[in-house]
Image (cartoon, rainbow, N blue to C red; front, side, top):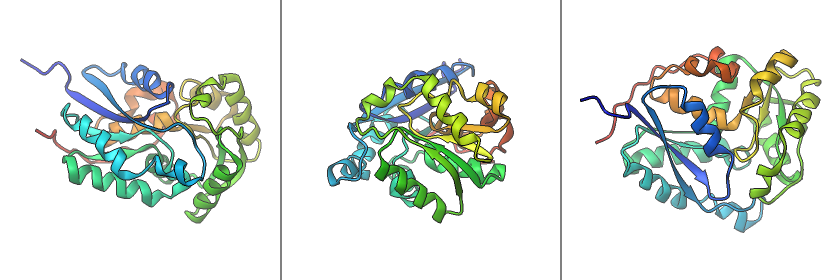
Length: 254
C-alpha cells in the first residue's frame, strides 16, 4: 500500500508565532500527499539585547529539529527571519548542523529569500517588517553587504513577537505600496508572524512587481529541496511561478 503522506515537511517555529502554521498548512494543502509538522522553541521578543539574541542559539533550535526528525520528515525548514539581522552565515551553519545531527536536508526562510532574489535577478529590494529601528538597521546593513540595494523600507517598531500577529493585512499592504513606489524590483515582507503570504499575489497584480513573503519562502524552500515543483502553488504569487527549482532530490531518512 502507498504511504498516506508521500512527503512530510518539518517546520521549526518560534513559540509565540500564530501566523506561520495556519498559513503554511493552507499553502501546502493544495498538494496531494503532503503533510506538514511543526516543532516550537521559545521566542518572545525581537531585539538586539543579549537575552533576545540568545533565543536563537543553535543548540536550542537543534533540539526542536531533533523532535521533527522523530517524525521521519523529509526536510526541515526554519520558518523564521533571525538570520536577516544576525547574518546569512548563521542560517548556513544551522542548516549544516541540522543535517549533521539528523541526516535530514534543511533550509530556512532567509536563505531561501536570498536565493529567490538571486535566481530572479533581483537586487533592488523594498523591505517591510514590524521590527524595531535597531533590527531594521541591522537587516539593511547585512543585506547591503550581500550586494542587495534597499530602495526603501517600512517598519512598525514593535518588539513583542506575539504582537506581530495583530498587525492587519491592510497595514501590511499599505507598507508594501509605500516601498513599491521607490522603484524596487521586489518587496520582501519579512516576519513569519505577520500576515503577508495571503496578500502577496493580489499586491503583485496591483503593483506590477514581485512580493516575497517570508512564510512563503520557507514553503518554497521545502518544495525545492525535496524536488517538488513550486509551480503547484503558483496561485500564491510569482515566487512559486517565476523562480527556477533547484535540482536536489534527497532521499527520505529512515
